[in-house]
Length: 353
Ligand code: ADP
Image 1 (cartoon, protein in one colour):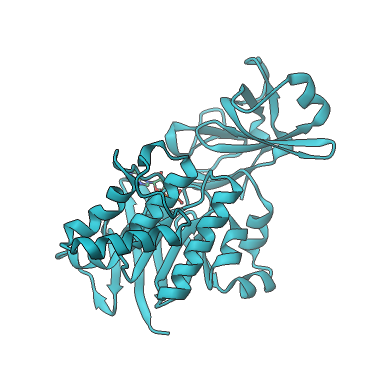
Image 2 (cartoon, rainbow, N blue to C red):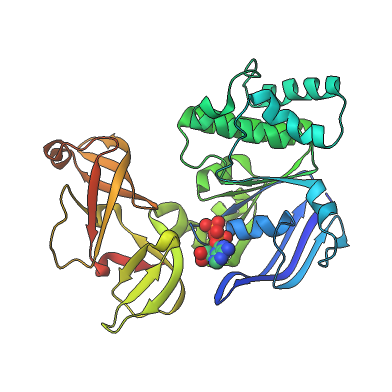
């Protein structure tokens, strides 16, 4: 297999934040490579550089063996397509959403029709051509976004967490489409995910990204077999977030995750940090409680699943957090999907990974 993309010591800075630090990575033609890492670890940044949307602050980037050095990026952009985590569809029919890119490229009408039908087949939305795209469910809209990318048949497809926040049925259809496109068209695919199990199912190789650093690269088998220290900790852990930490005058630290979310940690740490909170260390309440715990967030319940005497809730506080409580508490609290709720946990319950 020859190499389609090569990054050599690529660094991307946003002001003081180092989103990507001396990344070295090769993407081979025809492979599915997943970029696995917690939120804030630099996955989107890496994809945007590969797509030619952003330029590295330093380092070299080769596409098809040719060095990309900041000149005309249109060539690269025409050879790859990126599907963003949340893509806005045009407020028109599914057909027109899909046809748009081909029309711009001057394809004849009949060819466009054939390609739209084929792209919809790949995402299992046959006969959806005339439906208003914006009225579809979230999962169906994401499948239209994917079809809109597939129709361009570029040699490289970049997917940024394509199944985040979707229900299992849509997740499995999207996974199947990705795998089918790779097999049938030999499209090279780079996919960001924070789901290690999805990476294992779909990918030929995985790159583990932590705090902007590529920690390990290898096949799922290699990484799982050698008991990678990163993978071992990562697979087990839920509620893993990365951000930038600053020390407070109280001798604690505040880790700022995206969206202005700040989590207080009981130790002093400055700079990039990855943190973890155990689902069972989080207290739930319906009203804002005054307590000694340093972290309180208002959120909304977005998912509930049962595990015998325990219940696990997914709560959106600007980031999704998993909380585990007993079934008894769950029943007493009368929480449901969309309930507004407060999460509380101690600074000492936040662990640095
Ligand atoms: P991921 O996709 O893994 O969640 P990102 O690549 O989005 O991670 O972000 C990596 C880091 O870079 C984070 O600390 C994020 O806040 C920061 N970052 C990303 N984009 C920007 C930007 N445009 N301006 C400032 N900081 C950014």
